[in-house]
Each structure stands twice: as structure tokens, then as C-alpha cells.
Length: 381
Image 1: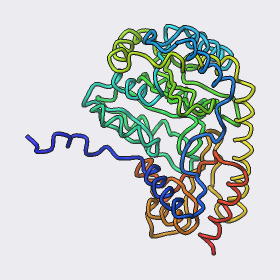
Image 2 (image 1 turned 90 degrees about the horizontal axis):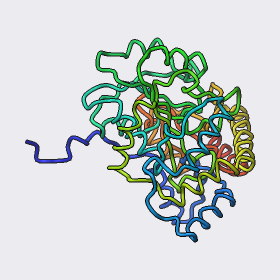
Image 3 (image 1 turned 45 degrees about the vertical axis):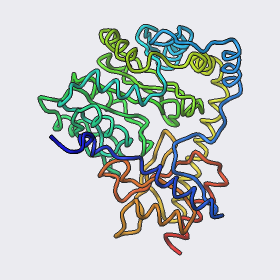
């Protein structure tokens, strides 16, 4: 027996973006000007119509437990969204609502992958994928993606990673940290493998080129994760949902009852209004993100920091930095101290992220311009 009862979680890592942020706050408290490009969080306020709906719900004492899968108005709003956006006819009974999509990702892993079995994911990927797999007691099997391939997932590489213990494939499109949008052919080929897919589609509404696709357009052997944090500028509201194969719903609801009971009623009320009535304002925010994307790519190219690929979604650029002989965390901290720009080290997203930094363009055009000018000076003098 080990002397440390929590040693089985020793491989769970912290978010290095938070370490950068903590150092940035320390420098700001000393009077240094810092431009924050480390977080994937919209800089826009939550649209007023959403906040007003929450306030009204609170004033009407809508603050109690709800059905564990969520209130009917929220789930019906999701049904309508997927009918309009994807031409899909899903049922409200397939939807499970919770307090953010992270807890739902953990649930999805636990639903599909028994402890000790394998789940395939990309290397690089959002940091919590690997960590939640470890917490769930399953084995994350990483498939490399490469800048030279525009960070597109190679399905042949996925096939080679499949073992007798593979129980699920975890994908993300548009992708964090690269902004890559997986192609239709990639999604179709993944669906044809016959292995359940967990598809994180939290950035789907922030797809700037081509049509938006869901794995549900190609298979129902899947769990789709989505939420209102990014497109609706509701990160702190913690409202997410997953769309589940009907055969798995009963077990998912039981798990959720025991873990969460339900998401906050007034937040769900606001979420229903967000999906049904805030589309116009959210589309304006998405348009602004796209303008920033184009601006950042242009400015980076002009100053010798061309990322070498075209991110078509989310609000990230994954930049291979020109400075050799320094790891990405050390570089991020050095840039923070010397240039006053906070960014996330690539290693936060897996071993394949070493040598890169993630730039979030969820900031004003003015700040982005200043940040890139500072980066140019830092790298090239």
C-alpha cells in the first residue's frame, strides 16, 4: 500500500495557462502593462437579453432543482437549433443539460470507456482531455497531428492506434488550440470505423469558412458535447449540454442525478433565451472574431511570424515560435516579463505542442495589434 492515497492521480496536470495568468497578475500588481491572450474567453459581455432573462427567472424564484436532463424550454431550444443549423431531427429526450461541458466530457468518458480501457485523442488537444481520462481511470492513446498537415486528423493514423481495448475516439472541431476545422471526409471516415465518438463541438458556431458540420450528420454512434460559453459569451454561467444516442440516455441520466442533480434553473432559463433570441447579437460577435482572425494572420505574416496554416474556427492561432533552445513554458514566461504579452505554452496541450505558443485573439483589435508589435520586437529586436 502506498503512503500517499492520492498518488494514482499524480499524472493529472494543472492548466499552464493559469500559471501564466497568475504571473501576469503579479506583474500587473507591480504596474506592468499586460495584454492577455492566454485564455479562450470572449472579451464581449453576455448579451443583455440573456442576463435579463436570468434576472427575471431569479425574481420569479426559479431557483430550484429541475429535471436532471434539463428544463423542457432549454432542450427544445437546442432541438430547434440543430434542426435549423444541421438539418437534424434530434429529440429533446436525447439532450442532457449540466453545469458546463467539462463535467459532461468526464461523464461521456465514464459512459463509454470502462476503467483500464483505451480512448483515442489527438496530440495536441485541449489539456483537460488527457487529465479527465486519467481521472476516469482510462488510458489516453494519442494520435499525432502536424502543422505540415494543417493540424488535420489523419484517419489512417487513428486506425493504427486502435487496440482491442479501444472504446471511444475523442475529437474536437473546431479545435482548441489550433482552430482547425475537421473536414467532412475526416468525419465520415471516423464515423465508418464503428467506434463510438465523443465530439466536442463547443466552437462549432465559430466556424468562419465553409459550412458547419456535426458528427451527428454522419453517425448516431456518438456523444456530442456543446455549450453556451464561447458563442454566447457565457463562460462564467457554466451551462453545457450533450446529445446522446437514445440507447445510452437512461444510464447517462442516472449518472448525472448522482453527480449534479441538475443545472441551475435560472441559468437554463437564460440559456433557452440565448439560443432562441440572441442569435443576431452573437452573430455580430462571431463576425468580429473572424475580422480579428484575418487581422492577426496578416500581421503575423508581415512581421515574420507566419503560423504556416489557416485556422478556420474558434479564436486561436497555434504559433511555432522561431526561438530555439527554450521550452514553451519558459518562453511564455519570458515573453510575459519582457514583452508584456500573456500567452499559453504549447506544452499545455500535449507533448506535440512543445515548440509552439497559443495566441487567443479574443481581445480587441487595438490590443492584438500592440501585442503583435511587442512579439515582433521580442523575437527580432
